[in-house]
Image (cartoon, rainbow, N blue to C red):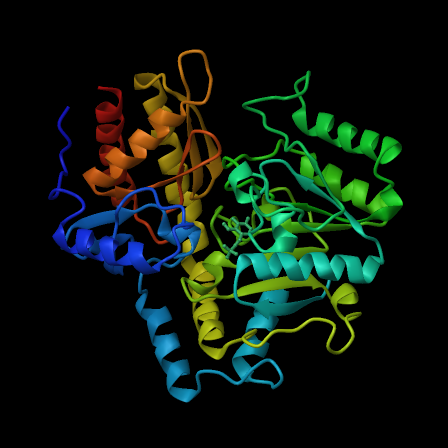
Length: 436
Ligand code: PLP
């Protein structure tokens, strides 16, 4: 079937010229899958430098929570920029305090909270693991296979969604033991409850090779992101909480991708009703302005001595202004919208499974949805996944993959039902072309 939305030949002449310049001066390490060169965006729509329109269902890797260039966020940024661009975290300013107050109110830690502000997800994870070591005095950690937590040396020691992330970089931070993430679609263990099996596996590790009294924390994404948009089985996060409590270790939730309304609740762990000791937030928090936060129970973070941890740009006023405006919008409208249009999207994607046997699984929460593509024998259909994503681009839909062969959908939280339906038509065309 011919796609209904072929635009021009892609990449167009302007995009081609820019990509050629980029190849001379930009690191080739960025994992770019197709030649989209951004010119401008509004909501869920983006235009490339040749004037082609696309629906952006990647949202800058789940960052543009409020859509591109939301007027309320832009106004907040402009207002802050007109006052001062930077002062450094050696001083105080109102927006930094207001953002931390807001995070303390929203973060489901079950106790008073404090924040350390930073610029990115990886920096939030670095802060969280440093805090866990600092307050427990313990050196070791448990992480999860398939996890993604960033690419600086501390967070990289947990990151394990693809071997290429570690290959060539030698030894990372010692003391991290990876265990399987419970995957109901691709069970690794016998029995129906993969969560219980992984909890047993961790308990066995504690008995045989990793002394629980040496473990500072368990670090987990409440929904595994880069690893395949995998929702852990009910009860699993509560089981981790109980393990941590039993052994005096901390529970760290990396909500960098799943937080700030993405799953239809402010934070993904709220679906399970499990409170972490420390939470990492970034991505959607600033709607595109670089900001991250380590949000921790106050009783832990207030143990940090003066100078124990710091940075130059933490609490940057413009990033804080964007974050406050983002939280206003997500709290008032967009988390609820993500729940509503996400349910609609998920049910339409599940309908597609009847027509396309190559769709093995559709899973997720809110607007964090994965569609796993499989071969006839159920094996991950990696090449098909890549082709669907390329064809979707040519039809006017920006998508990214995750896991071995999962198409992930993470549009702005402001995306409308009509835009979901338009994306579904484009996706259908991409699937038809890929399978032709
Ligand atoms: N944690 C999670 C769950 C992520 O998905 C990511 C990025 O994709 C990170 C941490 C790292 O964030 P950043 O790329 O901002 O360093």
